[in-house]
Structures are given as C-alpha cells and as structure tokens.
Length: 544
Image: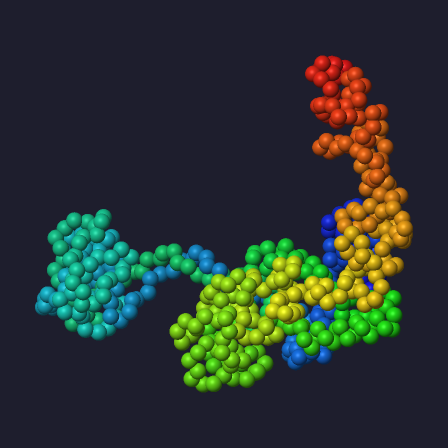
C-alpha cells in the first residue's frame, strides 16, 4: 500500500522544468505545492494507479464480467497495452515467375540450345522478335522453356511485351518488333505448345532480376487499445483517430491519454476515502451517488462493423459483446444488435443497411470500425474520432463513458451535471452549505488564497487564472510594476497600460520623459518604455 502523498514525490515538472523543485502533493488540493501543476504534468509513471482506478470504477457493475476477462496475474484490471506488428512495403529484388496456365510466358533473354532436327511445324502462331534476342535467322521451331503445359491457342499472334508478359490465349494481335531489337529476317513460325515435338528446338531461359516489393515488419506499441477485438480491427480504429490522439508509447498521443485519464476520471469522484474530511452523512450521500452512476450511466464503448449491426445474429451468432439475445432470423429490416428495429440513427440501404454517426450524422463506412455504447442502445453508432464528451468535446479516454439523457459524458462532466464541484479541492460537494463566488462553487473552508491558503471570507482578493488570491500574495507574486517608479501597482489602483509597459495613472508617473509634462488625457508616443509628448522631446531624448 502506498500513501497518496508518496506517489510521484520529487518528480520533475514537464511544464515548469527547473522552476519546480519536484512534485509535492498539496495536503487537500490535487496539485503540486511547488508549481501548482497537476500530477499528470509531472514525470510520474501512473500506469499501475490508472489500472487500479479503472478496476475500482467497474467493480460491482454489469461490466464485472468484462474486467474478469481482462484480469491478468491477479491484478483487478490491467490496461490493454499491445504491440502490433505492421508489414510495411519496401523495395527488394525478385525474378519473374511463370504466368497462369492459359498464357504463354516470354522471358527477356533466351539462349537457344541445338536439338535434333525435325520437320517444320504447322504455322499456328507468329512470334515477334524479342528485345535483347540475337539477330539473324532463328531456329525453325522453338519451345519456350518454362511455359505452362496445355494446347496452344489456335491462330494466336504473340504480341511482344516488355518484361515477358504475354496476352491471353486466343487473342489476335499483330506482331510488332520491340524497340531496340536487332534487324534481320523474321523468325519462322514457333510453337508455343507446352508439349514440343521431338523435332523442336529447346530453349534455355535465363530470368532477369528486377525490383519488387517485399514486406518489412515494424512493431508499434500502444499504451491502450480496444479490448476484446482482433488486432486488425484495433489497428484500423487507431488509424481513424487524429494522429495527435493515438496513444503510441512515447508520443504526444500517449501523453494526451495520461492527462485525460487524470482529468476525465478523478479518483475522488468514486472513492469517499480519497476525499477531504467528509462527514458520515456526506460519505453516505457519495456512496449513493457512486451506486447510481454504476447502475444507470457508466459504460465502456465497444467496436463493431456497421454491416454487422444490421445482421440478425452478429459476428458470433449473439447480439452484442456479451450475448444479449439474437434477432429474428430472416428479418429484412435493419436491426440493431439487440434485435430491435433500427431507430432514426440507422438508415436502411439494401439487405446490409447502413448507419449514420450519432455525433456528426455522416454515414458510417462499411468495413471501418464503429463504436457503440450499450447504454445508448444498439441503434446508435459513432465514428472513433466522434466518441467524445458532450461538454469538453475530448475523446472519451479508453472509451469509458457516462450516458445521461441521450448524451455522452466523461466522468468529470457527468459528476458536474449531478453535483456542484469545489473550485478549491476539485471534489464534488455533498454538503447542503457551500459558497458561490466568481461563477464557481466552493466548500465553505476551501474559499482560500490559492497561494498561501488563508481563508478569504471578508477579505480583499483578486482572481488570477480563475483562482482567488489574497492581496498580499497578489502584490508579491502577480502584480505588474510601474515603469516609472518600479513599484508594484495595487489591484484597486488605476493604471495605464501600453503594450508590455504599465504606469500608475498619476501625474508623478505618467509624464513625458523629455519635459516632465503630465500626459493624463493627452496624446503621447512611447519609445522603449519612455513616454514622449512631441517630436521635439523625442529628438531630445534620443540625443541624450
């Protein structure tokens, strides 16, 4: 067992770099005390913690069987990290091979070999000169070495083809000398039959090597892939995601998944023991909340092919991934995996039917994987890149969704739709008493300075990046400084700003650098942070 404050202690911040002394978890905020960034922004390996979090999330749900199926080595849940081997095309060297049995194969180079003389064969086919073949009178009759056996096509004229590919048997073509062939009298008729007579002249063929494509295997490791599907379907799913969202190990996509796992599925939304000082009554309310979303909203997306959604029995003869019942055999209407008639999301298009994406309303392409959510019903499908939270529009991490009133939510925004969330500790508020300020909700004791944690009730504060800061901390850490007097400008004081420069809106600060004239309400020009009232003062300042 590991204490929460020990996880990632001292890890470097990937955003602040050397400005952060190392990760140190705040004692009730879910951020680093040193740099105010979250643990997901630090160089912390959270794979074990993420797996445990997802495992706890699906405990005692209808997906308990799925988690059991994914169980490995005694761990309640282990992320589906896979390595997929992909055959990538590369250039190699190959030699030509004989064509089909119905076609004669002509190779670039033929070396005649003398044979016993015989009577001339019947003129059944005319052979064109072959590029690279020796000129002069050719043998009276020659059989092509390596040609497939079978009777020759009657009255077929062989057209010369570069690379040794002949036309189909029985076609009539005019023989044309190949470009670059040596001149000389055309050869008498040649027999292309695979059964040469004793009088035939044998020919020895020397195949010529030429560039060809071979396969090179490349391995790609994904931090997560859809469970329970074959690798080809999982790979196609990944290809349909935006490149920057694909969770390939060591890439921007893997970092995106790590951050979304922390943001979309807060641990403190599912476990009362991870919340700060809940009363027994609040613990009971939270347990009821967790039970409710596990029974009514929580789900995990699954992959299917659109054409399988329209068949009565699906790929394995059962509806849905867990055998939820089969449709009636012979049903000609488009049906979902539960065997029910398709709803408006389904568009009937012949026997196979087709579906429109529930998010973008575009027709799903057959052969491409689609995501379906059991809670939503089998008449709804999503493109992989369209399976997003309706609030934050981010991809639902690991296809974990919460279904409510016809909408997909991530865990965080489902919680926000059920309960107010504290802007200080990021936990859901189960108390009847809380504070509302600056468009956010706060536990009574958590409306504190974001820098020093002092209580702000009845005190002056300033909002910095949507976080309240007390006046002393604002003056010390956030206030801009007057360009004239170099003193910090108080939050309630009037000031004049021009670009990156700021001044107190007072005569002793906002004045001409040439003649000391007060410029409040006057025209002025700025030169390297200096205020000027005229061209003459500009020349005077430049000359000094």
